[in-house]
Length: 370
Image (cartoon, rainbow, N blue to C red; front, side, top):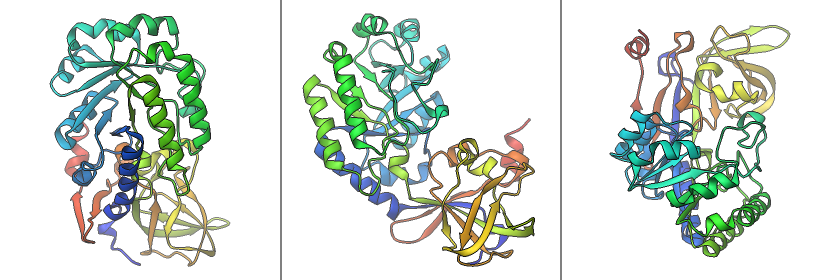
């Protein structure tokens, strides 16, 4: 498989693979009664929203711009959350947000008069969490994410119609989640009984192969019926996992005790989470084999390395390398480090045709600066 240097790098989103996840979400919604909103902080590529819209109930955001994007490009319900709203954000949100979720009781009180009449909520930090990384742990020490004081939450309850518990990151353990749900139901029962809706956040890998979806749905439904609330989930990666690749071309192969293939992309600029969390993406192509190679980016950063692999073939300049799972927390984190070309966004539609929905050039680079 070869590509001309001018055609790469690009993200390739596959609608057929995306559809598999969406059909699982349709089953979840039917079996549990839960509503599902897309977390735009993970994935905001609106070129595939037309497909996603039929399977999801709306979007949830972490900023004014994301909330506006959800309203304009996705439609349906718009949930607006932020760790810290500015007053101008709140005034703008009134035009298109269905729910406004505050991170603290103090922000709720400060801006209540501006959003009175909307569905309002508070993020609650239950003091428990599931995360492989301290950096992403919502209940880490000194966490600023959500209300921790029960008395403050109870006092604010008359001003809100719902609460959000976002306490998971890449949790594929259904038993762990259901145990945590029981804990939340016990600790916050008096508050939950006064609410109309409860968001259980995202970070739940319920579309992972082998996940006990029926058990998960039964737990959600029981929680909803016990407290008389509409349950929401806010998945990001669970919606788009396995549906995209970052397609690159080998520019050079250098030798320093091992072969190092330099591709026309960068961890720093195009798959930043792998650099931050010190992880390596899977290689979708070439297939695994006996040839050991390090695959590295072309930025000036010494640690711009995707990982070490054993592949079926020795890599040479001009060869294609496809990095797997390149949808979540990648496209939304693109940057212009080193002035490297921004990967185009391409979509393989359900009929198999590939469409370039967005490409970037020098003017985009220059206009992002001053």
